[in-house]
Image (cartoon, rainbow, N blue to C red; front, side):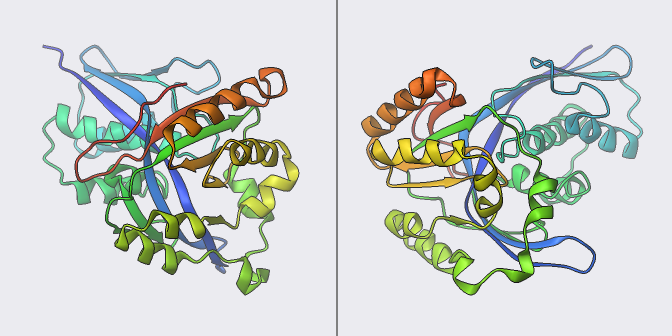
Length: 304
């Protein structure tokens, strides 16, 4: 008999992103403050039939081996000798190629789903250990919440939940390759003042000091992506003019987020972004909030 499961795969933003150095093996050592937000994809899984299949609602997102969610399911099914069929349907809402870990969070949800559907009995830690084989962000997407990420992104330290505020997300029309952005960053030539104050942000989070977090927002990758894509700066300017308390590009970009203590100002900024440049500046705009691990609640909706 077929079994069904529906899961939410939440996106993330980087409140702080520092690249410490480029290692001799080509990997970059990072220190990042990761935060889950309320915008999410929906993953529907159903056992039965033959083989493994993945379908999405977007024509430009791959369905087969090219999809990280497919590789996540295959990883566990191969390891545990699962021969049953599995159909996975992904409704994408998180912007694609946008610095919000959309592919990684879908893969994380599929690992959790396969574990549940087939009664594998793996702990969260064991799922995270397997997730890192798929991508550096996957273990974090299994853990969720507020966290310090170090190493190449695989060393995770949970932090207390971020104080709530409204979050406006805006994705320009462009997509960005994370690999290309890191390739252009001269990590070993960054001046001391170019590095975000990650330790200070950790302290502010532990104190529940939202202003302290906002004062330390920083992302070294913005120095690579923003000059090549001036629409990032234009989106940030619109957010500031409409009352954002802090703005930053997330991850390798190009998604920009604004933090707002005033919900009305957040809604106003979102409206301005949707209309900017004849509605062509932003491909997707959402008003949401932080999704925190402790209570599973986030302030605000995922309005697009």
